[in-house]
Length: 245
Image 1: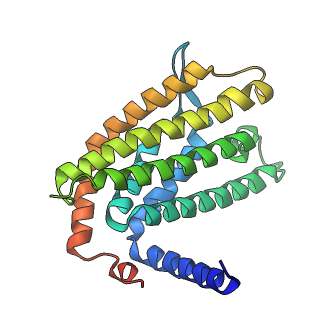
Image 2 (image 1 turned 30 degrees about the vertical axis):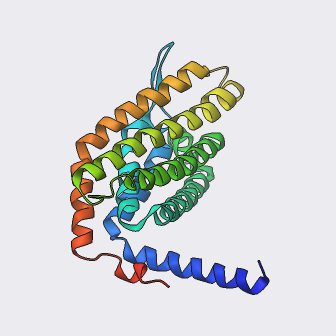
């Protein structure tokens, strides 16, 4: 690719990104970004740890992130959903940086040890959550789009949307949970947390049970997602984005 073509490609992608941010309704983007930030914080706490299963707090909110991705993928496509996922990750990293700076500033007003411990964060948890989320976002978005291609007769119907959401969410959540668990609790936790660790079996079962739990949440809330995408289509949401040459 020549230098001129590369510049044009970069300019086009930047323009597309700006139009996309204006095209997607603010509420969905806001909920998406907030859910990603909350996942990162809640993942610091292990809710359940048995010989065959372990769950962290992120499981309580991660379903919302995937529902938002499913909605965006259905209406705007997998590339748009992946761009918004990267957008959410960047904001999350900036938020973590601010949290870290605040936690590092000394204070004599009170004992803020617990506050600093939580909001100061742990670098390998941030690394694990970022890598896991980006990888799972690509899996979710591409699979959601691919499943949608199978419903040529009624691509905008309820059944098509539900199957897209259920299959992609289960697969995406499994990859998200497994990659995060392996990075954080299998590789780094034994080194930095006095021997605390999860086994590969626990990581796999965490990923599987987490995916099942979040699939149940997706089943409960997918009717809302379907109504949103239907309303977006009726209102021609994102027309300017779709008209990009």
